[in-house]
Length: 216
Image 1 (spheres, one colour):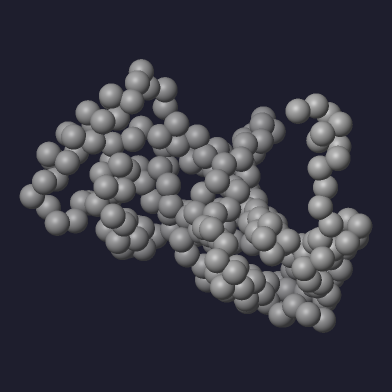
Image 2 (image 1 turned 135 degrees about the vertical axis):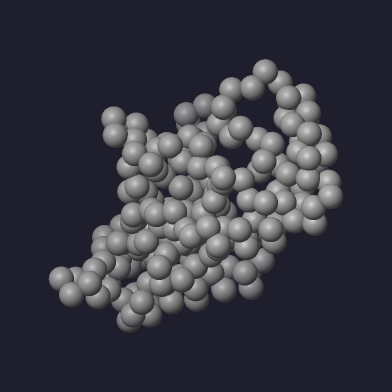
C-alpha cells in the first residue's frame, strides 16, 4: 500500500438525507430512533462507541466501549475505575462519544460531562453479566503492565475458587458505571460529493435543546 492507494480510496454516500425538519426535538429521542434503525439493519454491535478523553496536560486518548444504558440523564457504560480512562476521567470529566454506522452512512458525535453512576445500578448490571465476565472484572488489573497472560489466567483461577460457592459475585469496589450527560449532539448523514448533512443539537439559555444545520 502506498499514498496513492490511500488517496484513491473513496466512496460516495447515497443512502439517505437529513434536514432540521427531519429530526425530533430532543436529541436523545433522535438517537433512539437512529439506534433502532441500526438494530433493524443488523449493524454489528451498534452500541459500540468511541470514548474520547483528555487529561489536564491536553493529552488525548480514545478507546471503544459499549453503551449499556440510555436515558435523559445520558449515555452509560461500565468499566474499571482504576483503568487509564478512569484515572483521566477523575482528572477531567469532560469527554466525547462517537457512534459510526458505515452501513447506514451515519455517525453521531456527542460531547458532555461524565459522572459515576450509582452503585445500585452498577451492581444490578454487574450481576446480570455472564459469570465469566464477572470473574474477568475481578481478575484483570486493567491498563496495568503485566508480565504475561499466565498471570491473568492464574488470577481467574483464584477468583473462581474464592467465589465458587456464591451464585452471584459481589461487585468489585474498583468497578462501576459512568454516565455522560450531553451538552452537544451531532447527527451526520453521508451525502454525495462529500456535501454531507450535519444537524447539531445544542442547549439555549433556558437549557432547552435546539437544532441547526452546519456545513460539511
